[in-house]
Structure formats: C-alpha cells, structure tokens
Image (cartoon, rainbow, N blue to C red; front, top):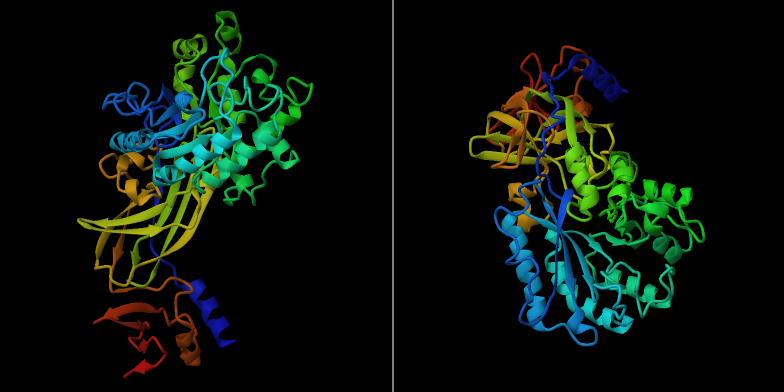
Amino acid sequence: MKRFIYLLALLVTVTMQASVVTYTPDNTTIFRNPERGFTEELSRKVSTSNPNVVKGNISSSWGQKDLQSLAMVLYNFNYFKAKDLPDEVLAGFDEDMQELRKYGLKIVLRFAYTERESDKVDATPEWVERHLEQLKPHLAANADVIYTIEAGFVGVWGEWYYTSNYGNESQHMNANRRRVIDALFTNAPVDRFILFRYPMIKTEYYGDSKPLTAEEGFSGTQRARMGCHNDAFLNSWGNDGTYASDDNSDDPKVRQYVAAETLYVPNGGETNVEGGSSAEKVYAQAPSEMSKYHWSFCGRSYATAVTSRWRSSGIFDTLNIHMGYRYNLVDGQFTDQAAPTGKMNVTIRLRNDGYAPLYNARTAYVVLKNGSKSYNLPLQSDPRRWLPNGVMSAINEQLSIPADMPEGTYHLYLYLPDKYESIAADPKYAIRIANKDMWDGDTGLNDLGASVTIASSAPLDPGELPEVIIDALPATRTDASFRPRKVMESGTLYIVDANGVRYTANGQIVK
C-alpha cells in the first residue's frame, strides 16, 4: 500500500521539463533515399571474359538526374544453361556488389537465361538448383546492397513466361516451378524478400489466397518474404495477367489481395505500354495505382511512351517524391534534463507520406551529440510499421541514459542507418526525413531541434525510483514533499529528497 501511495504522489507531483518542437514539412523537394524510387536497368550476358554487369557501367554521375538509389540488375546466364557458373562470373558478381557500395546504391536483383521471345530454352530445374547453390555464399556476403530479389531464372527475362522447361505460359504453378521456389528460399539470404512475376504464383504455391496479416508481416517466415512484382504496370487486361485469376483477366479479388499484401512485402516493376495512344490513356493513373498497391520502385526508362509522358506532365516528379516511404515529422516532445542511468522521455508524431512502407529492417535511434561525444539510443518503434499514404504514427518511449555519459548539453538527432555494419556508417544509406532544415548529408543525421542536459543531479522521472528505496521510505516520505532527485557522486548513485536526506540504492539513509 505504501508503494502505491508513493507512486501515485510521485506521478502527480514530479514532472519533467520538456522541449516541444513543431516541424515544417517539405512536400516538394526530390531527394535521394535508400531502397526506393526510380531504377535504371543494367543487364548483360555474363561470361568468363566479361563477368561484370555493374562495374564499368556506372560512375559518380550515374543516376544523379533522378536522384536514384536503386538499380535493377539482371545477370543473364545464357552461356551456362547446362554447366557450372565459372569462378570468374562469381568473382565478377562480388566485384559488382563492391562497386555499388562505392556509390551508395542497392539493387533489385534478377537472374535469367534468355532475353528473346523466340528463345524459350531456359535451364532445367536441376541446373537452377545448382546455380543457386553456387550463388548462395555470394548472395549472403552481399545482402547489404541487395534491396530485394526477383525470382527470375524461369522464362524469357526471368519473368516466368515463354519457357521450355516450366509448362504452359499461362500456368502459375507446377512441380518444376515449385522446385525453383524451394531452391530460391533455400539459398537466398533469410532477411531478403523474393518477388515473383504474378501474385497467383504465391497463392497457388500455398494453396490459399489469404493475404498477410499485420502479425505475419515482417515475421521472417518464408510466406512473409514472398511477394510479387509487376512488369506490365498499367497495361491492358489486368496488367498483362498480373491481376488474372483463372479465366478472369482482371480479377478484383486479386487486386484486393495485392493491395493488402504489399503493406508487408515490396512491390514494383516497370510499365511496358509501348503505344503512344495507350500511354495517353493510362499515364495519369500512375499515382493512384502506385498508392493503392504500395509501389516502392519503378523502371524509369522502359517503356518511354509512358515514362516520357510522365515527365512532360509533371507526374514523374510526383512519383519520384512519393514512391516508397517518405517520413514527415509533425511534432516532438523531449526531456530537457536527465541523469546518467536515468530516463529521457521521447514523444514524436510523424506521417509516412509515401506510397509504401519501409520493408527491410532497420533501427531508428535518437542520437545525443555534444562535440565529438555521441550516443545512439535505440527506439523500440519499428519504422516498417510507420504506415504509408499519410497515416500518422506515434512514438512514445523512455530511453535509458548510459551510466558513463559525461555531463553536458547534448543536441538531439533522429538517425536511421542501414542495419548492416558494412554500410551503416555511410550516410548515403541513412534515411532522410522530409522536413525543412533537418538533414545533414555528411553524417546522415536528422536534426530534431531540441537538446537535453545531462547532469549528475537531475529530477527523477515518474516510476524511476528503485523499489527497494520505496519499501524503505518512512511514511513521512510518501507525500508530495519528497520530490526526489538522482545524484551521482564518485560513481555511486544516491536518491536525495527535497530536505537533503540521502538514500543509497538499497534504501539506506545516509547520515
């Protein structure tokens, strides 16, 4: 009972000083952010003498026009349909991935064996399995710069159509296709999504058409990692069969399924509308379609009948701003003063004004910085759960102040680096917030416009007092006059009341 009375009094009488900040949105600037936006395609028939697709084909100016952070990279194994991938090709893949790190890029990755409709001869399931077995360690070693993997391997361009080994073009699932899916999940990095050309491939693979739930999303299971891509965006008869179900060429149920699934798995691709008159009919539908189906990436060049119309109308810029995620802070409240081992309250409201969530896991940090001293305090809030299309999300957390943090005033920043240590310190892979006067491109930090003073003597936040001290308090100390503070002296923590009475961490009064 004494503990309850004390805590109630503490909640009523002890309040922390806090800074309140209102942020100014930036709704018009096009800027680079990782794992989203327009892509340029790079592809080649690789060989022992020409094993690279990326290296030699990009430079420091590559992609700057549209501020790209993604490339769509296709490795064509035409020369190796029935033989092992040579060491030179595997080494060339590793070289390409290192080249991406140099320029701060990631890729949408695909492998294929053919590139002409007249050539349907792809590799057998046995050879696909063997090639994926060879690729497995190289995919794992370079997962940091792989945004997502498109299933590939089957059919012309790896689009699971026009194939000699995997059944009729209209089929979504059969035994050979199932073998390729199994091999992909056996050999791909466990933290990367795999996207298939048609959503019905997933529904037939699992035997149901239930979309992922919020509980299943981002769970890391195979089902939660399997999605689709659309390389016929806005084309006729259900985007060239993307939304087809049985004999229905544009099934509303399939569309509903994709709209629900893509809150938890990436979606993107390219338009293939090549006729000018058709492009004129569909170009203006892009923003609403991308918003509904949560697009995070799209080819910028093919097909130019549409993409050129997007540019001339201004829709291209709209898509470039909103494709993927776009986090906009609304306001924040931050503790002004805290002590080592104490707590700092952080409350932030934000909107995701993009069409899609963030899909690959990363941690958001509040950074406390004083000169060369910097401390990253992780938030529990998952940025992948900050829902798109203007949905408001709230972060309300207590962050623990490290015991060894020196006294001083620390400025606050929001930091969302890549989770992979290999590129975490590179600001090109950090997320920029869409507010004015926040971004520091040299560090990847977003300025929260607030500070906290760390002092050895600071007011206790409600609920911080150790229970052993609560139990030791005399009844006269459980009223509003107690007003405790934390004091750190010579590495020892004391609790001091308003009358100067000092308690040790085990509840003993210090004489």
